[in-house]
Image 1: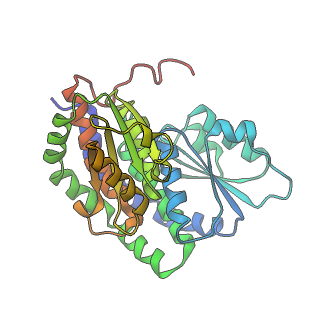
Image 2: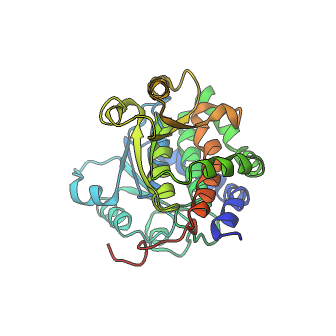
Length: 335
């Protein structure tokens, strides 16, 4: 039996290609306009805020662009906005109706802040109310954990910001970015069986710690919050690698499971220290390493790791009798 998540995963390459074809020029125009701003707010929740964390951490290693990532609630309730503003906001939402993100957009507009929405729904409130809209052409997405909307949102953010940076390194990354649809198409075909086996081996694990540093923290956040907890109904906790020595270091022992996200030896020094510590204690380490999947710049790691992670979660859910992507409360209970 194939669940809805399966087809939505398989739709990722075509969704990216459609979005690139339709929005590439528009994204470059937005990038040019936003390059003149002093500060850019990125607003989202769930999978959407994970894309914001990822692009913030990718950009800060190459540029001094001031990016502030917040949930909608934090921006609305706690963000001071002065009068002389040279700021912009990008809101990210699959539905374009996420209530707290929409409130943040409206607050920004009250202060004359330039706004862009990235959404999958062209007729949504965010699409209509933002100054500019990038529509991710994924068609309907039903699985709650976000697959094709995740990769198209992340692509859009990378394209906006790496077009701003204007260096040899950013040009190289942009060239590789536009080849991501082909990479994802390949990984969908080549990584399922290994990840299915990995899921079978770990089907009885109750708690997964998800660890990543730099650009991998955003993906670790998504993995824990929307993939393990919402998708496969497993307890999970995202951990920034640099904070392993606080809290988790006291909890790891034989029988504990930690998922490590790696980009490369030079990029992951702090992650590798945590991994070595866990290996010495006999921890159940699950490692997703960029070098096993693609030969691309480390700053594009999430685009390579997301597919094997999706296969892992998809089959883990099925081994535990769950429909990956179904919900018990989200969308049914007003929160």
